[in-house]
Image 1: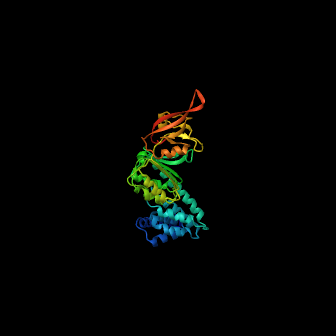
Image 2: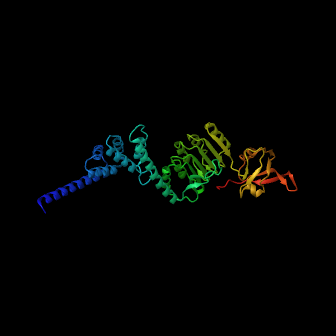
Image 3: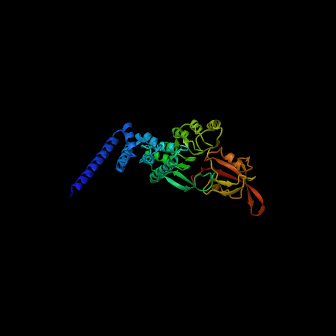
Length: 389
Protein backbone atom coordinates (compact mmCIF):
# COMPACT_ATOMS: atom_id res chain seq x y z
CA UNK A 1 0.00 0.00 0.00
CA UNK A 2 1.35 3.46 -0.86
CA UNK A 3 2.00 6.09 1.77
CA UNK A 4 -0.85 8.24 0.41
CA UNK A 5 -3.25 5.27 0.61
CA UNK A 6 -2.23 4.53 4.17
CA UNK A 7 -2.75 8.15 5.18
CA UNK A 8 -6.19 8.17 3.51
CA UNK A 9 -7.19 4.95 5.25
CA UNK A 10 -6.08 6.29 8.63
CA UNK A 11 -8.05 9.50 8.05
CA UNK A 12 -11.22 7.48 7.31
CA UNK A 13 -10.63 5.37 10.46
CA UNK A 14 -10.29 8.48 12.59
CA UNK A 15 -13.41 10.05 11.00
CA UNK A 16 -15.50 6.91 11.67
CA UNK A 17 -14.21 6.77 15.25
CA UNK A 18 -15.15 10.42 15.74
CA UNK A 19 -18.62 9.84 14.29
CA UNK A 20 -19.22 6.82 16.54
CA UNK A 21 -18.12 8.89 19.51
CA UNK A 22 -20.60 11.63 18.54
CA UNK A 23 -23.39 9.07 18.16
CA UNK A 24 -22.52 7.48 21.48
CA UNK A 25 -22.45 10.84 23.23
CA UNK A 26 -25.81 11.82 21.70
CA UNK A 27 -27.32 8.52 22.76
CA UNK A 28 -25.97 8.76 26.31
CA UNK A 29 -27.10 12.35 26.74
CA UNK A 30 -30.54 11.67 25.31
CA UNK A 31 -30.99 8.71 27.64
CA UNK A 32 -30.69 11.20 30.50
CA UNK A 33 -32.96 14.23 30.79
CA UNK A 34 -31.64 16.56 28.09
CA UNK A 35 -30.89 20.16 29.03
CA UNK A 36 -32.06 23.14 26.98
CA UNK A 37 -28.44 23.76 25.94
CA UNK A 38 -28.01 20.21 24.66
CA UNK A 39 -31.31 20.37 22.75
CA UNK A 40 -30.29 23.70 21.20
CA UNK A 41 -26.97 22.19 20.11
CA UNK A 42 -28.72 19.24 18.49
CA UNK A 43 -31.12 21.62 16.71
CA UNK A 44 -28.12 23.45 15.24
CA UNK A 45 -26.65 20.14 14.07
CA UNK A 46 -29.79 19.49 11.97
CA UNK A 47 -28.30 21.84 9.38
CA UNK A 48 -24.74 20.53 9.62
CA UNK A 49 -22.87 19.99 6.36
CA UNK A 50 -22.19 16.38 7.25
CA UNK A 51 -25.12 14.00 6.69
CA UNK A 52 -24.13 11.67 9.52
CA UNK A 53 -23.92 14.56 11.96
CA UNK A 54 -27.48 15.58 10.97
CA UNK A 55 -28.67 11.99 11.48
CA UNK A 56 -26.98 11.80 14.87
CA UNK A 57 -28.69 15.03 15.98
CA UNK A 58 -31.98 13.71 14.65
CA UNK A 59 -31.61 10.54 16.74
CA UNK A 60 -30.65 12.49 19.84
CA UNK A 61 -33.69 14.78 19.56
CA UNK A 62 -35.94 11.78 19.02
CA UNK A 63 -34.60 10.17 22.20
CA UNK A 64 -34.99 13.44 24.10
CA UNK A 65 -38.72 13.08 23.49
CA UNK A 66 -41.21 15.72 24.55
CA UNK A 67 -38.49 17.81 26.21
CA UNK A 68 -37.39 18.76 22.70
CA UNK A 69 -40.85 19.76 21.44
CA UNK A 70 -40.72 23.53 22.21
CA UNK A 71 -37.34 23.87 20.49
CA UNK A 72 -38.51 21.80 17.53
CA UNK A 73 -41.59 23.99 17.14
CA UNK A 74 -39.42 27.10 17.06
CA UNK A 75 -36.97 25.48 14.65
CA UNK A 76 -39.78 24.50 12.27
CA UNK A 77 -40.55 28.19 11.81
CA UNK A 78 -36.98 29.18 10.95
CA UNK A 79 -35.70 29.89 7.48
CA UNK A 80 -33.58 26.77 6.94
CA UNK A 81 -35.52 24.28 4.82
CA UNK A 82 -33.50 21.28 6.05
CA UNK A 83 -34.11 22.20 9.69
CA UNK A 84 -37.79 22.92 9.08
CA UNK A 85 -38.31 19.60 7.32
CA UNK A 86 -36.47 17.59 9.97
CA UNK A 87 -38.18 19.43 12.87
CA UNK A 88 -41.64 18.77 11.44
CA UNK A 89 -40.84 15.11 10.78
CA UNK A 90 -39.58 14.73 14.35
CA UNK A 91 -42.78 16.27 15.72
CA UNK A 92 -44.83 13.84 13.64
CA UNK A 93 -42.83 10.84 14.93
CA UNK A 94 -43.07 12.00 18.54
CA UNK A 95 -46.84 12.52 18.18
CA UNK A 96 -47.47 8.80 17.54
CA UNK A 97 -46.39 6.80 20.62
CA UNK A 98 -47.25 3.14 21.01
CA UNK A 99 -50.53 3.85 22.82
CA UNK A 100 -52.58 6.80 24.14
CA UNK A 101 -51.59 8.50 27.39
CA UNK A 102 -47.94 7.82 26.62
CA UNK A 103 -45.71 10.70 25.50
CA UNK A 104 -46.94 12.41 22.37
CA UNK A 105 -49.54 14.94 23.49
CA UNK A 106 -47.13 17.90 23.43
CA UNK A 107 -45.86 17.06 19.93
CA UNK A 108 -49.42 16.65 18.66
CA UNK A 109 -50.44 20.02 20.09
CA UNK A 110 -47.34 21.59 18.54
CA UNK A 111 -48.22 20.25 15.09
CA UNK A 112 -51.78 21.53 15.44
CA UNK A 113 -50.54 25.00 16.39
CA UNK A 114 -48.20 25.07 13.40
CA UNK A 115 -50.98 23.85 11.12
CA UNK A 116 -53.24 26.66 12.33
CA UNK A 117 -50.80 29.50 11.66
CA UNK A 118 -52.53 31.46 8.91
CA UNK A 119 -50.07 32.69 6.32
CA UNK A 120 -47.22 30.59 7.67
CA UNK A 121 -45.10 28.76 5.12
CA UNK A 122 -45.01 25.65 7.30
CA UNK A 123 -48.78 25.48 7.91
CA UNK A 124 -49.67 23.35 4.89
CA UNK A 125 -46.84 20.89 5.58
CA UNK A 126 -47.84 20.72 9.26
CA UNK A 127 -51.47 20.04 8.30
CA UNK A 128 -50.41 17.13 6.10
CA UNK A 129 -48.27 15.69 8.88
CA UNK A 130 -51.07 16.11 11.43
CA UNK A 131 -53.35 14.19 9.06
CA UNK A 132 -50.68 11.46 8.98
CA UNK A 133 -50.60 11.40 12.77
CA UNK A 134 -54.37 11.05 12.98
CA UNK A 135 -54.38 8.23 10.42
CA UNK A 136 -51.60 6.35 12.23
CA UNK A 137 -53.30 6.76 15.61
CA UNK A 138 -56.68 5.73 14.16
CA UNK A 139 -55.22 2.57 12.60
CA UNK A 140 -53.64 1.57 15.91
CA UNK A 141 -56.90 2.21 17.77
CA UNK A 142 -58.99 0.26 15.23
CA UNK A 143 -56.82 -2.83 15.49
CA UNK A 144 -56.69 -2.78 19.30
CA UNK A 145 -60.42 -2.14 19.80
CA UNK A 146 -61.61 -4.67 17.22
CA UNK A 147 -59.37 -7.29 18.84
CA UNK A 148 -61.09 -6.48 22.15
CA UNK A 149 -64.55 -7.09 20.67
CA UNK A 150 -65.62 -3.69 19.36
CA UNK A 151 -67.53 -3.29 16.10
CA UNK A 152 -66.36 -0.43 13.87
CA UNK A 153 -68.07 -0.10 10.51
CA UNK A 154 -71.33 0.47 8.63
CA UNK A 155 -74.50 -0.58 10.43
CA UNK A 156 -77.82 0.50 11.88
CA UNK A 157 -76.83 3.09 14.44
CA UNK A 158 -80.03 4.55 15.86
CA UNK A 159 -83.04 2.31 16.39
CA UNK A 160 -85.29 5.36 16.27
CA UNK A 161 -84.11 5.87 12.66
CA UNK A 162 -83.87 9.62 13.03
CA UNK A 163 -81.23 9.71 10.29
CA UNK A 164 -82.28 6.63 8.34
CA UNK A 165 -80.13 4.02 6.63
CA UNK A 166 -76.73 2.73 7.69
CA UNK A 167 -74.05 4.77 9.38
CA UNK A 168 -70.35 4.26 10.11
CA UNK A 169 -70.09 3.97 13.89
CA UNK A 170 -68.49 2.33 16.92
CA UNK A 171 -70.56 -0.29 18.76
CA UNK A 172 -69.72 -1.90 22.09
CA UNK A 173 -72.02 -4.65 23.32
CA UNK A 174 -71.85 -8.08 25.01
CA UNK A 175 -68.91 -9.01 22.77
CA UNK A 176 -66.69 -6.34 24.37
CA UNK A 177 -63.83 -8.00 26.26
CA UNK A 178 -61.56 -5.00 26.65
CA UNK A 179 -59.37 -4.35 29.67
CA UNK A 180 -59.92 -1.12 31.66
CA UNK A 181 -56.84 0.38 29.98
CA UNK A 182 -58.26 -0.28 26.50
CA UNK A 183 -60.77 2.57 26.82
CA UNK A 184 -57.89 5.02 26.26
CA UNK A 185 -57.91 4.00 22.57
CA UNK A 186 -61.25 5.79 22.10
CA UNK A 187 -59.39 9.12 22.15
CA UNK A 188 -57.72 8.16 18.84
CA UNK A 189 -60.93 7.35 16.93
CA UNK A 190 -60.74 10.38 14.66
CA UNK A 191 -63.58 10.81 12.17
CA UNK A 192 -66.13 8.56 13.93
CA UNK A 193 -69.19 10.65 14.78
CA UNK A 194 -71.54 7.99 16.19
CA UNK A 195 -71.27 5.35 18.91
CA UNK A 196 -73.48 2.80 20.69
CA UNK A 197 -72.76 1.34 24.14
CA UNK A 198 -75.10 -1.57 24.87
CA UNK A 199 -75.64 -4.35 27.39
CA UNK A 200 -72.63 -5.67 29.31
CA UNK A 201 -70.39 -2.94 27.86
CA UNK A 202 -72.48 -0.24 29.57
CA UNK A 203 -70.10 0.47 32.48
CA UNK A 204 -68.76 3.67 34.02
CA UNK A 205 -65.20 3.34 32.73
CA UNK A 206 -66.34 2.50 29.18
CA UNK A 207 -68.80 5.40 28.97
CA UNK A 208 -66.19 7.79 30.39
CA UNK A 209 -63.77 6.59 27.71
CA UNK A 210 -66.33 7.19 24.96
CA UNK A 211 -66.49 10.83 26.07
CA UNK A 212 -62.89 11.20 24.81
CA UNK A 213 -63.79 10.42 21.19
CA UNK A 214 -62.62 13.60 19.41
CA UNK A 215 -65.38 13.82 16.78
CA UNK A 216 -68.33 12.23 18.61
CA UNK A 217 -71.69 13.80 17.68
CA UNK A 218 -74.29 11.09 18.35
CA UNK A 219 -74.31 8.55 21.19
CA UNK A 220 -76.73 5.83 22.29
CA UNK A 221 -76.28 4.25 25.73
CA UNK A 222 -78.57 1.30 26.30
CA UNK A 223 -78.99 -0.78 29.46
CA UNK A 224 -76.66 -1.08 32.40
CA UNK A 225 -76.13 0.86 35.60
CA UNK A 226 -74.17 4.11 35.63
CA UNK A 227 -73.04 6.68 38.15
CA UNK A 228 -72.92 10.41 37.52
CA UNK A 229 -69.14 10.15 37.25
CA UNK A 230 -69.54 8.36 33.92
CA UNK A 231 -71.18 11.45 32.37
CA UNK A 232 -68.99 14.18 33.85
CA UNK A 233 -66.38 14.05 31.06
CA UNK A 234 -69.04 14.80 28.42
CA UNK A 235 -68.78 18.41 29.54
CA UNK A 236 -65.51 18.31 27.55
CA UNK A 237 -67.11 16.78 24.44
CA UNK A 238 -68.16 19.94 22.57
CA UNK A 239 -69.22 18.19 19.35
CA UNK A 240 -71.81 15.91 21.00
CA UNK A 241 -75.25 16.89 19.66
CA UNK A 242 -77.50 13.89 20.32
CA UNK A 243 -77.61 11.60 23.36
CA UNK A 244 -80.03 8.69 23.81
CA UNK A 245 -80.22 7.06 27.25
CA UNK A 246 -82.31 3.90 26.89
CA UNK A 247 -83.17 1.66 29.87
CA UNK A 248 -80.22 3.05 31.85
CA UNK A 249 -80.39 2.90 35.65
CA UNK A 250 -78.59 5.76 37.40
CA UNK A 251 -77.34 5.65 40.98
CA UNK A 252 -78.36 9.32 41.29
CA UNK A 253 -80.31 11.58 38.91
CA UNK A 254 -77.68 12.92 36.45
CA UNK A 255 -79.30 16.33 36.13
CA UNK A 256 -76.15 18.45 36.46
CA UNK A 257 -73.89 16.31 34.22
CA UNK A 258 -76.53 16.31 31.46
CA UNK A 259 -77.03 20.05 31.80
CA UNK A 260 -73.26 20.62 31.45
CA UNK A 261 -72.85 19.05 27.97
CA UNK A 262 -72.15 22.20 25.91
CA UNK A 263 -73.38 21.47 22.39
CA UNK A 264 -76.22 19.02 23.10
CA UNK A 265 -79.25 19.61 20.87
CA UNK A 266 -81.33 16.44 21.39
CA UNK A 267 -81.64 14.38 24.59
CA UNK A 268 -83.79 11.22 24.62
CA UNK A 269 -84.56 9.63 28.00
CA UNK A 270 -86.28 6.30 27.42
CA UNK A 271 -87.08 3.84 30.18
CA UNK A 272 -84.54 5.21 32.66
CA UNK A 273 -85.20 5.36 36.39
CA UNK A 274 -85.46 9.16 36.30
CA UNK A 275 -88.66 10.64 37.67
CA UNK A 276 -90.71 13.30 35.91
CA UNK A 277 -89.41 15.91 38.36
CA UNK A 278 -85.84 15.09 37.22
CA UNK A 279 -86.95 15.39 33.61
CA UNK A 280 -88.52 18.79 34.27
CA UNK A 281 -85.33 20.00 35.97
CA UNK A 282 -83.28 18.94 32.94
CA UNK A 283 -85.71 20.70 30.59
CA UNK A 284 -85.42 23.84 32.69
CA UNK A 285 -81.61 23.76 32.51
CA UNK A 286 -81.40 23.00 28.77
CA UNK A 287 -83.25 25.84 27.09
CA UNK A 288 -81.74 25.20 23.64
CA UNK A 289 -82.07 21.41 23.70
CA UNK A 290 -85.02 19.24 22.69
CA UNK A 291 -85.61 16.79 25.56
CA UNK A 292 -87.88 13.75 25.13
CA UNK A 293 -88.96 11.62 28.06
CA UNK A 294 -90.60 8.20 28.16
CA UNK A 295 -91.05 5.59 30.88
CA UNK A 296 -89.95 2.96 28.36
CA UNK A 297 -93.04 0.97 27.31
CA UNK A 298 -92.87 -0.29 23.73
CA UNK A 299 -95.92 -1.27 21.67
CA UNK A 300 -94.24 -2.09 18.36
CA UNK A 301 -96.44 -0.50 15.71
CA UNK A 302 -95.58 1.67 12.72
CA UNK A 303 -97.82 4.49 11.53
CA UNK A 304 -97.52 7.60 9.41
CA UNK A 305 -97.01 10.51 11.84
CA UNK A 306 -98.39 12.92 9.26
CA UNK A 307 -101.67 11.04 8.70
CA UNK A 308 -104.93 12.30 10.26
CA UNK A 309 -105.60 8.89 11.87
CA UNK A 310 -103.50 6.34 13.76
CA UNK A 311 -103.69 3.62 11.11
CA UNK A 312 -101.11 0.87 11.52
CA UNK A 313 -98.92 0.20 8.47
CA UNK A 314 -96.61 -2.41 9.99
CA UNK A 315 -95.99 -4.45 13.15
CA UNK A 316 -92.58 -5.06 14.70
CA UNK A 317 -91.78 -8.80 14.94
CA UNK A 318 -91.98 -10.31 18.46
CA UNK A 319 -93.45 -7.08 19.82
CA UNK A 320 -96.28 -6.55 22.28
CA UNK A 321 -98.53 -5.50 19.37
CA UNK A 322 -97.86 -8.74 17.48
CA UNK A 323 -98.49 -10.84 20.59
CA UNK A 324 -101.80 -9.05 21.22
CA UNK A 325 -102.98 -9.59 17.66
CA UNK A 326 -102.90 -6.03 16.29
CA UNK A 327 -102.77 -6.12 12.50
CA UNK A 328 -101.63 -3.81 9.70
CA UNK A 329 -104.64 -1.81 8.56
CA UNK A 330 -106.07 -1.46 12.09
CA UNK A 331 -106.85 2.08 13.19
CA UNK A 332 -106.31 2.78 16.90
CA UNK A 333 -109.07 5.07 18.14
CA UNK A 334 -108.81 4.77 21.95
CA UNK A 335 -106.16 4.08 24.60
CA UNK A 336 -107.60 3.17 28.02
CA UNK A 337 -110.79 4.99 26.95
CA UNK A 338 -108.84 8.12 25.95
CA UNK A 339 -109.48 9.13 22.32
CA UNK A 340 -106.59 8.67 19.87
CA UNK A 341 -106.63 10.92 16.83
CA UNK A 342 -103.24 10.31 15.25
CA UNK A 343 -99.91 8.59 15.87
CA UNK A 344 -98.63 11.44 18.06
CA UNK A 345 -101.59 10.94 20.38
CA UNK A 346 -100.66 7.27 20.76
CA UNK A 347 -97.01 8.05 21.45
CA UNK A 348 -97.96 10.65 24.05
CA UNK A 349 -99.98 8.03 25.94
CA UNK A 350 -97.23 5.43 25.68
CA UNK A 351 -94.63 7.80 27.16
CA UNK A 352 -96.32 7.52 30.54
CA UNK A 353 -96.38 3.71 30.62
CA UNK A 354 -93.73 1.30 31.84
CA UNK A 355 -92.85 -2.11 30.37
CA UNK A 356 -95.14 -4.80 31.79
CA UNK A 357 -98.21 -2.56 32.10
CA UNK A 358 -101.43 -3.82 30.52
CA UNK A 359 -103.51 -1.37 28.50
CA UNK A 360 -106.80 -1.49 26.60
CA UNK A 361 -106.85 -0.40 22.97
CA UNK A 362 -109.90 0.10 20.82
CA UNK A 363 -109.16 -0.45 17.14
CA UNK A 364 -111.24 -0.32 14.00
CA UNK A 365 -110.63 -3.26 11.69
CA UNK A 366 -111.94 -4.05 8.23
CA UNK A 367 -114.70 -6.66 8.22
CA UNK A 368 -114.19 -9.11 5.31
CA UNK A 369 -117.96 -9.45 5.02
CA UNK A 370 -118.41 -5.68 4.89
CA UNK A 371 -115.27 -4.30 3.17
CA UNK A 372 -116.47 -0.72 3.40
CA UNK A 373 -116.95 -0.87 7.16
CA UNK A 374 -114.39 -0.99 9.99
CA UNK A 375 -115.63 -2.85 13.03
CA UNK A 376 -114.56 -1.74 16.56
CA UNK A 377 -112.50 -4.29 18.50
CA UNK A 378 -111.24 -4.13 22.09
CA UNK A 379 -107.69 -5.48 22.51
CA UNK A 380 -105.75 -5.98 25.75
CA UNK A 381 -101.99 -5.41 25.36
CA UNK A 382 -99.17 -6.09 27.84
CA UNK A 383 -96.52 -3.57 26.88
CA UNK A 384 -92.91 -4.65 26.33
CA UNK A 385 -89.44 -3.16 25.98
CA UNK A 386 -87.70 -1.84 22.92
CA UNK A 387 -85.12 -4.45 21.92
CA UNK A 388 -81.65 -3.64 20.67
CA UNK A 389 -82.56 -4.54 17.07
